[in-house]
Structures are given as C-alpha cells and as structure tokens.
Image (cartoon, rainbow, N blue to C red; front, side, top):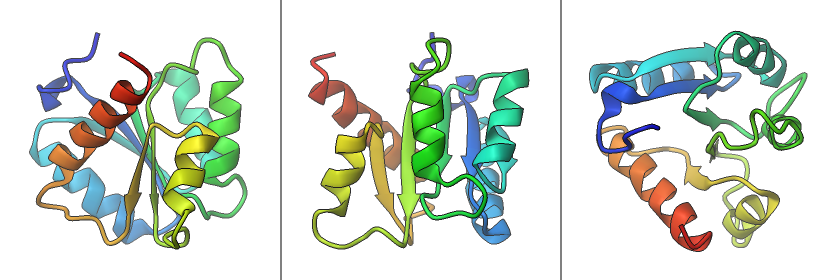
Length: 137
C-alpha cells in the first residue's frame, strides 16, 4: 500500500504533450523522492503501464493521439488498473463547471494550470484526500 505521506513510496506517471510541463512536474516530484515516468500522450502511458503500474497518474486532458479522457476510460475499464488514482492537470478545462465535470467522469482530482509547483506534493495529497472523503473512505 502506498503511504501518501511518504513521497518516496510514490511511482508517478506524468502524461502531458508539453515537454516543459513533464519536466517541471517530474523534477519537482523527484526532488521530493518520488520515482517518476513520463509520457507525451495516453498511448505512451498505456505502454509504460504494461511494464509497471504507477501508484498515481497526473494527466493532461487535451493531448493528441489518446487524450486524458480516453486514458481514464481505458484504465477504469481494466480491473487490474482501475484502482490507480488519476488526477487531471489542465489549462484547457478551467471554466466554471469543468472541475465538477472532470470529477464526475471519474478522475480522482483536478488541478488547474498553472499549478503551484512549490506546493505540488501538498496539492496532490489534498486532491487524494478529497477524493477519498467523497468515496466514504
């Protein structure tokens, strides 16, 4: 079981078509001790997950090939992978009601870009706590 208080136990898959975004998230999480993998779209993410399932996925929603919405559907349809928390990280879906739509679709959390990088770990923990509270966990 993952200890969400101990970042060193996290294996995070960052999925974003923007290389700078992947790099900033990866560098930040690695600084705090997380193991990190990156993918530029949902297809790459699914290939990575075949080798080792992450403990957490941060995914952009709007990407070419296979977007974050499709990645979510693919993972939730797989009984072996549906337990993985998936947080949407987006600049494209930040209008009123988008957060609720993202969470209703089955994402475990929502982060609007630009994300406070200094507080990233706490933001992730908060999103996961909110998701667990909403599920009665």
